Length: 170
Image (cartoon, rainbow, N blue to C red; front, side, top):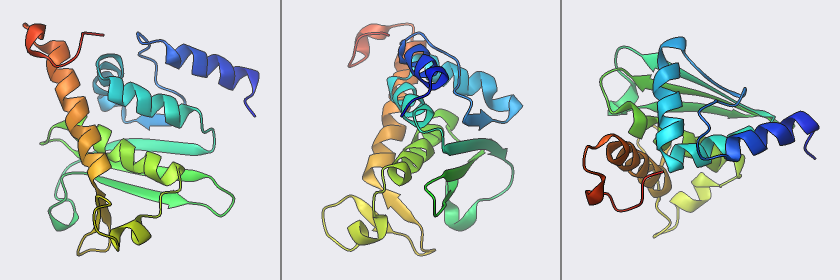
């Protein structure tokens, strides 16, 4: 059940021009302008933030990461699901990659966990778009698609010629 303040936040975030991050998504200070721009210009990231905002027991911290990530990963989400249903996620995004694509990709992994997607079971079946990597983590076609979509949306939003974009400007 939504509280009055949660309902008000959901209504605010539902506006397509909203650039305010919900209180349960906390980027490093240096990432705030990038994440707020992404929220304003990417329908994918806007949808993800709205979905995460609707789950008060979810918390997402987003950090810039210098140095290497494990096994050649371009970004990383460390997600913990607690017994009573809360989810805590730490997203690590290197400085040297497409930050918007990686942000949307990792936020989609958070949503997969919020939704209770059984990645281990899906990775055992063909055609699910889920694979288990050598380090035991999972990769999904869904997260890759979200990352590509957000990158395309930002590219179109900042392009001088929006006519080449496959969707109308927001």
